[in-house]
Amino acid sequence: MARELNVALLGFGLAGSVFHAPLVACTPGLRLHTVVSRNPAKVHAAHPHAHVVADPARAFADPAIDLVVVATPNDTHAPLALAALAAGKHVVVDKPFALDAAQAQAVIDAATAARRVLSVFQNRRWDADFLALRALLDAGALGEVAELHSHFDRFRPQVPDRWRDRAGAGSGLWYDLGPHLVDQALALFGPPLAVNADLAQQRDGAQATDYFHVQLRYPRLRVVLHAGALVPAAALPAHGLRFAVHGTGGSWIKHGLDPQEDALRAGMLPGSDGWGRDPRPGTWLRVAGDGTVQEAAPPAPAGDYPAYYARLHDAIVDGTAPPVSGEDALLVMRVIEAGLRSDAERREVPFPADRTL
Image 1 (cartoon, rainbow, N blue to C red):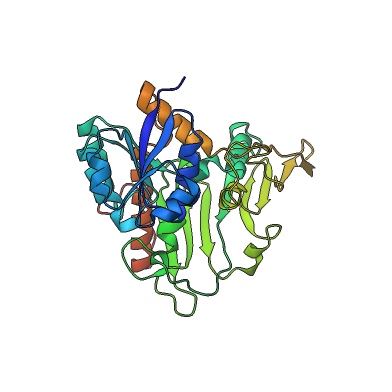
Image 2: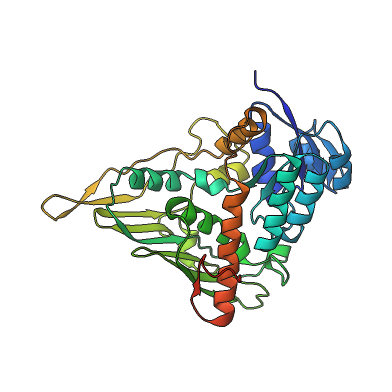
């Protein structure tokens, strides 16, 4: 039987209630012991056996807690992670890791000093479509990739009244969805040579970035990361573009988002029958030996968000590598910062040679 670790979850908003709590609860060896929330009724409706406290300090001081999951507003991520590490806890931080690379490095240094496992929650590495793309690339099925277009569009013409859409540190789409798309690109191709970003506020009444179009430049490859809030096609899964990848050996084009978030929102249990199966596996076009382009059956792995916490448990108990390292997340923050600088200065920013970021 897996050694059981007690988990304290900080925050029970979207990230805490939809993603972290169900995934922790379904992972062998993890127990959702405490939730830090000012809404105990909401917590107990979903997790009746969890302790609920209003102050994170009470969770940090509890000797029963092994792991702290930070799922609070973005500007609190680094301070809460530092406090948890100072109390001797292992730590998961929801994306974005921090507000900037300096904060991220401070958290990494604190985890090293405390000899505790630190990881950042990048669940989109376990999206069905990303796993399929990785399988195609690992097999060399697309040849040498020349272009990757990664979209995470939405149709939300009305600006909601929530912290993510208000003016302030860490708000807006570049901090919300940008870390997902950047992390996937870095996981596939490593650091780029340069970053060129266009960030905008397009909706009436927008206070924070609700559009980004960012190019990561590699020697041959160009990676385009894009998100907008005024994309009607995104409301129809069959039409909203997720990936378009083109190489010397073929193309792979994918529409619609991984189904796991919708399943979690609907209250489905992770790992249940059919979990992570994407009904839209994408279109794979191969370049045949005679130079013609032919359609082929694409790989269709199931998405696997539960794998994140299973690997995290093993990292804490057995000393294996965490599912996403602090160093991985630091690199993401450097790209996020480079994008902010590129947009502000209206120029391409060298990366990572430009260490003045």
